[in-house]
Length: 494
Image (cartoon, rainbow, N blue to C red):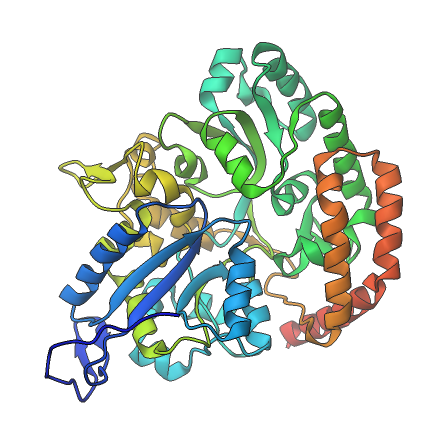
């Protein structure tokens, strides 16, 4: 449980006042709230130091709170957040894709942001994002999260370790399709046998690139998908889809050749990736993706299979947002902190890179070089897309070297020029089907790692998997989702 500090001050602020952009909260007598902010990625050993620096920035701006940032690993983040919400444990802000936040909201776990909140308390959020983007994140007209200022679409392709490519004599400009990777992976295996050519940790990424699969609600655990290309209409079982099956057979081929990193836990993959033990990932990408991962001794570049960026479930409503827990003891103070993360460059730099001259250095032009140890080295790859308004972050030396010295405006242009699919903005409400959702998620958990890692014969494992999905009510979910989708299309046409 969060603690509150007793202050020695006697002055009590009786009314809300405006200080610049930042709304100053009426503080309860002799109580000072501590606002906690949970983020997901690599674990961090400098949370206390960053929290103290964040508290000082907030206090200097007239926001009278204590601040704590807490980083959790991917393996226990969702369970921790869910447990805290269900148990009523007091905490304030957390980051997640907005589809997942909507699921928490359906069950009353999220503070609803009102129009008054947007106007009077979250003005920096509105200034940064604009009403159109904010409105695209609503669920049934209600807003439960502020969209993070990052990309709202993605390219599809491969990003890879440039040193490994150079050491192995590989020219990645020759790669135009998934099939071209066969020869590349063979060369990596031959020249650097201790390095894994590819990992398959992120199913939402790899099957989207290889098979045009868009997981509904950005949740592969629901085992329902849509086709980005429009080759298949409506919502379907991905594991009966021809393109998905072909992609899984390709992964199986790679596994049999010893190309695939088979420990599919996110933390293990991140460790090997950051140490330069994995050559590439098949992935969704945006301007700055390779620069995001190019910290320390690892540098990356990309190959795109399609120059057109596409908006998918991963972007609306699956793009990342910042939400306030319904268990927050002081949502007004939490909104102050959240608003500050959208309007104050120094604060968002702190959350993203750490402390100047400790975790990073800055040259005379304000260009940042992230250190090889410390907060930035540990969390930058995750922090730079989930902590608020990243349009105003300082640029890094790697971004400047890649021609992305104006990355904030580059991302805005990228977002504005992206292509929407017919289903962009659709969200399946599973609240009436909790039994089926739970059963399907359990079934998926049992099979998905084996299916995605290529460790079993595809035809055999899919026959078993699909039989289990059918027995646990997948068709009921498919029928419900398709009915909701038709309603969405009809409303969209009006």
